[in-house]
Length: 325
Image (cartoon, helix red, strand yellow):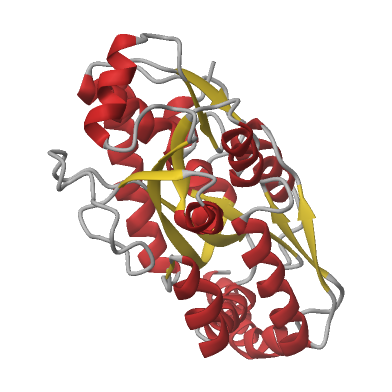
């Protein structure tokens, strides 16, 4: 009996080794769906559509974008987690999806490590602290002074409850001992709309989302939420320069698939995604020129990153008392 079991294991192993290359070569066998957990029109949506187009060309197969905004990215995450693990349904997961929601949300129906396999990093973007021109503040000192003089009367916009913009703004308010009213939106695009309309007077925003409006003067750059200046905003000081060393607010995005997706398929999607995002016309024109950054992390690197980021945001949530309510 034992000999027969060993023989079966050996046969299964040999078959798997032979089937893996064939599996990756036959993928995709039908249209692929890339689910984006934000509203259409934002930076994530734009990059996601470029990725879908280029992957479709590479695979000679239709790759469609499906925007499923809301619920702090939970709606999209739940949908993909329950999808067949065959590589044909993928999620553009954000930092909140993988590293923030488990600590912030009281009830969450998915586990980042149990329900997904991490495929490949896509891009990252640092944040800039911006204000509507109606706010009488063009510097960090003026902003802090105005907030202190008007506790709870000034509104700030974010890409949603639990987003890095939300949590890092709460950290900023905690550090400056000021307060403001949070206006959570369903992504960077609607948050930018609120800022441009003046319904929210300030906020942390991805550089790519607000760069055109900073150049036109419709929004004012107060400080870069980083310890290094940006090449596309060289004259904007950093929060580190203004007395907040180590303050680093960034959003990052990675492609994930349902747990159980065959390793051969995960490997192919990952390598093809990396190749697309490293094309010069994408890396230098679609990313760098918009203040976005390469995020070329493979599966093992993403696992380590998510572990570090989860610990960081868990501490931040405890420190600030931030909630998704």
